[in-house]
Length: 351
Image (tube, rainbow, N blue to C red; front, side, top):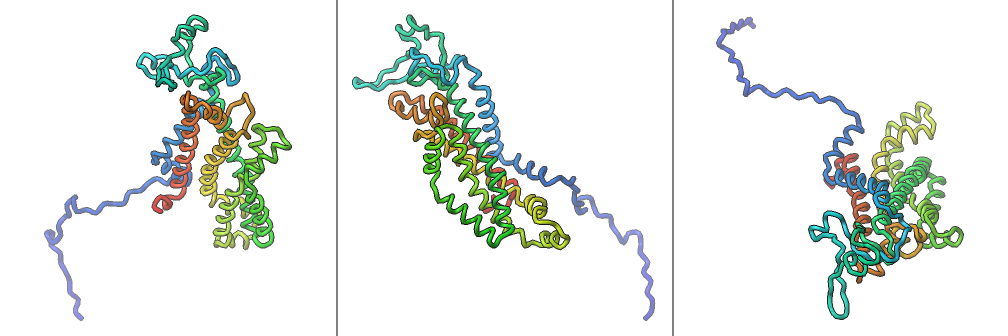
């Protein structure tokens, strides 16, 4: 076979224009796992709205009761049943202290702040109650934000119980399996079969009604949902190759549970814990509404709603503000939990 030599002329090749040059892949700076989660969380508008609302509610719960000269238990009988009155807004005809009363002769609009008797006897023309007063003359604004403190305390208790007890319970039950799993699961099922209302009622027979009673009731049953989620996640991971590799290298059980398995399921557990917060807050509000909550004169959102419910037809403003704060708190935690779920597992958003 003869060797053929090729000779190229200068015009055999043409330079490709810049518009035809293929784009080179861009290099992105690597970022940590948590930074990636945080960047996805920030892009979720609903989650950001939720966390901003939680922050604002937390600020008002801390500083709100200090913004007025009244305390949650101070009462002035001559100031009872006063409608909301806010400086500045009253000039616009909004929250100016007037309320519509429904009587047998029809509806009338009155303003107790500016009535002749109130002006002469108590000087109400210079008094402002931003959320109004209740039937005992107590400031609803101060009592609402004092009650919000209790709701946020219940939220903190729910998270601590979930992460410190429910998570560990589920990790141990799922990892060891066998008889250990059977005994632990039967115990949790028996405990879960007892209604929370029954547990609280039994606790009241032993401990006087109050915040401690509700805390113990939530601590007794509030961890069961978290333990089931943790157990299910452990059952999915404990036969994976990296777990078998750790066992082969002689790693002990506690090391595998807390150093190998837990970091891989921690995101799901945080999300589950956030979803348990609204449930715990609603449980406290429900118990307070039926009279098993914090005793008077201490206020919680549930007890405020319960007290205002009796005067809802005559003075509806008494129930509006506690209900709004409770709804904002529960909705905000739900929005934040949704954002965390999407941030930790973006595929869940498509399901």
